Length: 245
Length: 237
Length: 81
Image 1 (cartoon, rainbow over the protein chains, first blue to last red):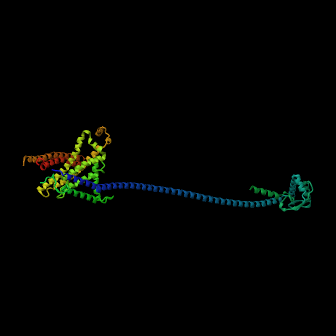
Image 2 (image 1 turned 60 degrees about the vertical axis):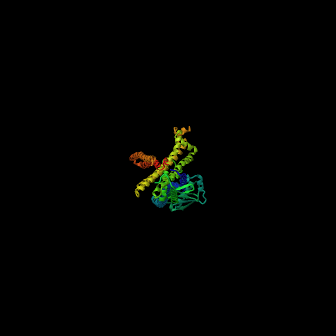
Image 3 (image 1 turned 120 degrees about the horizontal axis):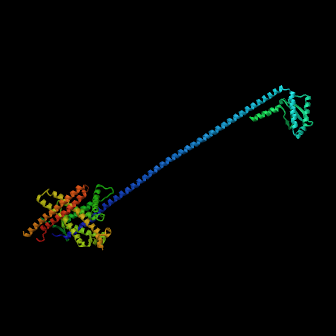
């Protein structure tokens, strides 16, 4: 048995060449392919994970937006409700105002009507009073009534202040003495005398007849009127009545 | 009957006698390199069946390296994988009629054993430096240095004889049976040879890997082992 | 044929026969132990059978050594020249 060392060396070299060639064309490329696929798979996995995270984020965003929309809708609804409420309130207030105005106008009209009615009533009551007074007067003796009124006139003149009396006495155009009926001369003289005595001096007297007085005497100058008649009394009563109403 | 221990030179190139084993080796090399080149020409990300088969081979060898030694397979993959593939194809080449496997000759197996011996040195020095390589002889303790030096030679010699004996005996037995009984009778023996060839290729590659990784591990400084009773620390003292 | 050749042939047969004995027993034990282990742990069957094959090959190597010695005696006996 012999070992051929040349053959041994040649086989060793052959095997080394085989190792070199196979490493170049087989081991390294295939291992690199395995590693490349592993890294690719890992990167794909990572990418998928990141994509999923992104999708989750988008989903959350959509949910958020949806919630925001709901909130906005609620806000809009609330706003619309408040607006409607205010509008209704405004309309109501307006209507109430209008109604109030209408009521006030009606009240005013009613008052005016009542006023007119009262005025009519007053006028009628005045006529009635005048009527009553005339009738009452008809029942009384005229001379006595006139005498009473003359007394009252005298009394009023005497109660006047002296300077007024003097002014009345000294009235240039004279004093009108108004009576309800035409007086006879005697009567006129008597009355003039009584007035002049009351005035404390002579005075120009003119007698005027006015049936509206019903009864009584009145003194009139251009500046001054002394009411002393039933008509004046009735007027005063009527005025008071109106005031009371 | 020819001696199975001798090989006949077909012709000479210079001083080198070209035997049939060398020719077969060249043919196997051509087949392996061309096949590997053609099969792994266009590797893509989505593997076809062909590429999946190639990757299965590579990942199987990686797994074996990782399981037997725990080392990262990348630096050893080329040498160990080629060792396994070459021995496997060479063993199985006896199936072709008229072809005697190159591993059934002394020269091829001796060359492989010598290469394993040199690769142990190469990887040991590359892994831990010359100091680390020489330190690996002192494991588990310095008393073992002569024994370890002897072992480093005898283990590769043992590998050499194991591979040669197994393959050669298969070929030899088949030859004897064929010469006695003729056709069809050697077929069960050839089937057994298939198994033997696979197991021998696997054993050869795994043993080479174990020797290499043992040298690299033993050559490491004591940082790898925290145990104070570690032999490497005793040696450091 | 001298005695040396006869002794060489005899020793070759002796080496192979006794070299086959030990590994045969050892392989029997190894396979029996492996079967036992697989029966206990069927899920570890892959690893066990792989280790079994490697171990069988290792054991067989001793028989192969004997065969190589026998072949050396027969075909490359240095004493026979």
